[in-house]
Image 1 (tube, rainbow, N blue to C red):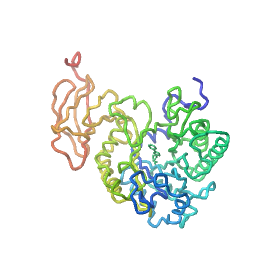
Image 2 (cartoon, protein in one colour):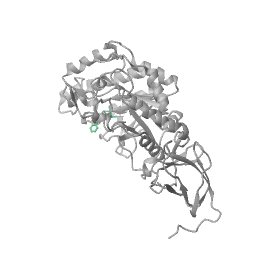
Image 3 (tube, rainbow, N blue to C red):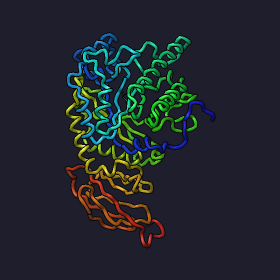
Image 4 (cartoon, rainbow, N blue to C red):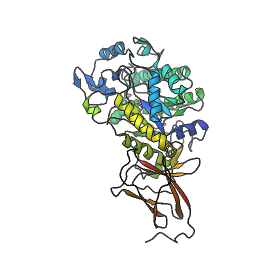
Length: 447
Ligand SMILES: C[C@@H]1N[C@@H](c2cn(-c3ccccc3)nn2)[C@H](O)[C@@H]1O
C-alpha cells in the first residue's frame, strides 16, 4: 500500500557507515542520570523495580525529583575511566542516555532548564564522553527518550484538540533538542530512540519520519534504530507493508531471538541487555545486585547475536557519583579478555548460511573471508560435541583460537566428533573450522 511515512528502503544499507556499525557486534550501553542518585531506594525503602523508573513507581513529587539535580555533583565522574571500561569490554561503540523518560538532559540544552548546566558542576557530560570514547576509536551513539514524564506538553494519548495542540508543541520541543544534539556533537554516529510506544507518538508517524530525515540530512551516514519509527497507520519498527523502518531492528530488549530462527538474519538488528536482571539505571539493592549476569552468559549472548547477524549492546549503570560499579567493571574485563582471544569469531562476523543451529553454541561466519567458527558456549554433559557440516563438506582442520590445531574424529560423511574434556577457565572455546568439498559425497542424507 502507498505510505507517505513508511520504510525508506527495501534492502539493508550497504554504505560504509552502516557496514562499520554492522561489524561492531559489541556495544556498551550506558544509563546514567539523576536516577543513579537514589539508585532504587526512596525514603529508606528499596523499590524493587528498574531504578530509572523510581520517580513513577515511588510517586516522587516533581519538585523533589528536580531537587536531585543539586546533588548531581559528578564527584567521581571521569569520562576517561568510563571509556577505559569500554576498551576493557572490547566494545566498538557506546550508546549513552542523553535524556531518559524523566526529562533530565546530560547536555546543557537551550530548550529546557532541566539539564547539566543547572547542576553544581555544570559540566557537559556528553561532550566529555564523546571526546574520551572517540579518542579510543570507539563510536558514540545517543539514546533519546521521546517519552518525557516532566514536559507539560507530553501526552500519552490525544483525546481532544487541546491534547493535539499541546503534543504538537512537545514534538516541536523534541525536534529542536534533536537538532541541538546534531549541531553540538556532529561526530555522533547513531541515534537510539526509546519511549515511542504511546498512542500519541504512533498517531504522529510523520514526525518520526521527519526526525530520521533531519538527522540523516545533518549527519550523513548516521544510523537510526527502528524503535523511532511509526508509519501513516501507526505501525512501529516494521511498516504496514512489512518493511523495516530505520536502519536496524531494535525490538530485542532484555531478550534475544530464538537461536534457530534464521529469518532474523535477513535484517540488521541489535539486542540490548542489562547486567542485573531488570534495572538499566544503577540499583543498589540486593533485588538487583543479587542478579548480575555471569561473564560467560554475556559471551553466550554475544555469540548468539553474532550468529544471527545482530549486535549486542550490554548496559552499564554508573553510580550517582559518576563511578562505574566495580562488579560491572569486573564483568567487562572478563568478557573483554575472552574477546581478546576469540574476537576473530565475533567482530565483522555474522550468520553462517547453511550451518544448522548445533545446540551446543553457535556457528558464526566472517563476512569478509567466509571463514566459519564454532563457538561452544553450552558444552554437553558428555564433554564432546558433534560437528555437523553442510552436506558435501568434510572437515580438514580445527584450530582452537588462542591455542592451535585441535583433534577431531569422523563419524560419518559431514559428521565429526570433538572431545572437549571439562570446562576451560578461559571460558567458552572457539574453533576455526576449515573444510573442503567431499571427494565422494553421499548421494543423500542417511535414513
Ligand atoms: C532501553 C530500556 N527501555 C526503557 C523502558 C522499558 N520500558 C518498558 C515499559 C513497559 C513494559 C516493559 C518495558 N519502558 N521504558 C528502559 O528504561 C531502558 O531505557
